[in-house]
Length: 247
Image (cartoon, rainbow, N blue to C red; front, top):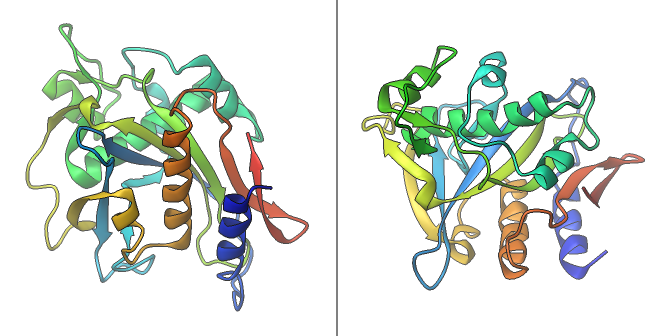
């Protein structure tokens, strides 16, 4: 294991003590990291969770949330990169291309719901929607474009937490923002503010340890060329101990 990997696993392990909640099954979730690489230092978009939330109140996080049934039914302008699809299906119960698409589409939908940003491509043809939040994409003439979205990390919340998620972390260039809806972020919404910060500065915000770890993984991935097919770090438990494996 590299020095980076050892440091991140050790940091995560320090958060595992004193948890006594009954074991619950992790829910599939997805998160989107939007990267602005127009300047000298790449910047990422983070949002601060409302202080009244029971789960991670006041923390800075990437937009994201649970995978919903409608996500499987949304159309896209392009398929997932084949290497990414393969990685998404590894170590997954009942793996399928449709389930892999749902992870990525959930990250896109959650990003819209929490930030008002629509990630995709402008469509000349009418965009078909399965309903719910996807109707906003159809109304704006934006269709999700999956080919340029990167799978950068995966993490399963350890046992003993009150909520557990099996989260896939995706990343996309800010140029993929095709439209935006105003008024989504405010003092009474799920994310009360959004900030664009260089990765090194973002790591100093009040955020969950796994978010900090993924930011460091992202920096290493950008330095390695940020290409599809690079190994994806997978944070999980092995023999009741934190582990970092590669997909």
